[in-house]
Length: 411
Image (cartoon, rainbow, N blue to C red):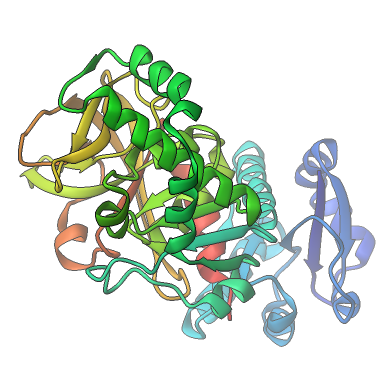
């Protein structure tokens, strides 16, 4: 992987001495990366391809970094091995950056620790670059109750490099009406047969849900969407079914698919999937069970069947109609994450332990009782909207590095 090291050193130090003084760290970096050293006089040119970090080669470079701050990446990772007063200089630079609204951190410690940090940062930049050019669909307008979950399309194009595409909900209805029951019989049978049970819906209801799935999938293909969110509630009166199965199956096929037209949560799902390669679950924070122990239930009516250990075919909780998915999991580690704001400038992330799947009749069908590492005051005082995203496994360190970069990208 390519790595750019923007290198600052005091005028008292020769360029050769930088490589001699910091040889332990720089030799380790060279073993793993194709390194391009960039010096301040070269910063008037576009940065080459690859992750870009700042190597603080000595003390006395604070003014030099300050003068070049607008030529550095939006999130500035300052590497300091502690030699030649590099750590002291880095701390002064970081303090100045924070006073002036710039984002970054100092990467310092034993060589192995620094290398792990470089690896995490390089992976994060790779993820940020992979998001560029993605086409994200908003099928139907966001649900009326999502008063804090929209994004600024122009800002997202500039910040993340993605294209937001509006698709009329009528196109879903027309596609649904054009698909006959006979075209999805096998899909319905496969969905039912792979479940560990089916409760409220009839087979005919599952067939209707599969027709909607085929319609939405056709729109994804027609508009070349990499992810989408669907105003599923507005479809119920016209199609007499729910979008839960369509979203579940498309998530399973690697297309992040969100509910209710929630744009911020969908973009979180997309970022998490690109970063981890894992399917995600979009859910409501539904009930706090123990504030002190950080235990709460997250619930929603759609989840990719392959994400769960097993699933039950249910009806949709709010409307008591259509078809939903109740995912059932064994205890495991999970990660709860949300990125939001009009420009996706805020984020929350916490490691969590799934204790059990509950079956409260007054909540959506898939219910996860989690114990979070982070205090639950976040949800009650500064929550980023309603829906949050859950992914299997502990991805906190990786995702935090990525979200730091995404939230730091300036408009």
